[in-house]
Length: 172
Image (cartoon, rainbow, N blue to C red):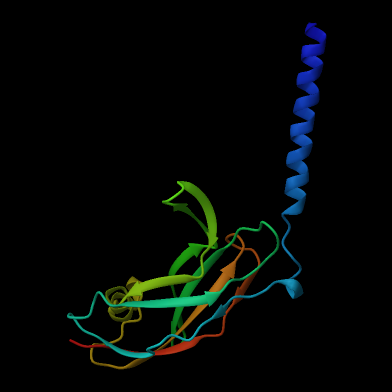
């Protein structure tokens, strides 16, 4: 009887291990020419002034989702560029878990947007370059280019959107 029990456990373990291996085989990054790159949408207001009164105003960056292959997890990164300086602004995973409050069920949804407040943008614009900002003087309109990069892992395949240009003035 013990022999049957141990034999059953070994067969069950082998089955579980082979199932995991098969699932991992399905998760493969597509060749570069088959990847669907993200596409950044135009935003409604590309010229704005940041004041102390509107610091809580939000800018929403939205894009069409990227696709690197079935089950491949990756992240989106938002970058701003001013002149020759490019700054990492924020990142988000490509999927997030949400809960349906009516059914208490959880499911995964695609992430295709990111919000920044004017206050966050002001900090990037006015902080000195040696402290991680652009160092743009107040009351100086600046053309900032924004783009999204979809990247697998820290150093994996990456695809960037075309940039959109924002004209931003931080008012004293």
